[in-house]
Image (tube, rainbow, N blue to C red; front, side):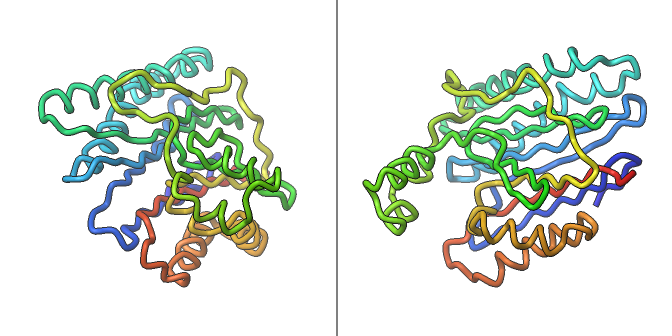
Length: 259
């Protein structure tokens, strides 16, 4: 758990039912800039390459953002410029490692920046960023997988609910950091203002073994709880499912300070 004057933050990393942990997660806040970040990376590649990829992404993010946030005079514009720079650096690091080792590896990136009660983000891949506000749960970042297209087919009546949820291409990524051109990047130019009662949830796709309805219900029941209790409730709900295919789990819960 990370307590700051402006935010209550909790992080959880769990291996699930996988043989290795290929997720990585980090958070840091800076008194000098009164700002900070939470970042999630979900690696892929096998042969330990997924673990390497996610760590390369986290490291590149930290190298790009820490120097900026150590500066008390940093501006929102400079930080907004730093987000795509972090992604570019991560992509270059993954490319370099792949050329050196011969492994093809990749990772998602979900990087969030908090400053002056505003949320900035950059997202590549399918790691979800949820906003719980006024009893409503919304995924506010883009999902760079086939899932949105498959869900559109469900809405059109072309697939049944079961066919949509079990579709073999559902988790196929349409954008990822893997050392090549990045097809899609979600990085809004304007930040989102945060309200004191908001709850933000960052995760790897392992969190999505819970349905949106299940996540919403848990957040509603724990809306006034500390971030660490919310994170633990989400993890315990995943454990209770006992899914033999449970993916690695990253969970970050961020609550703005109550005023």
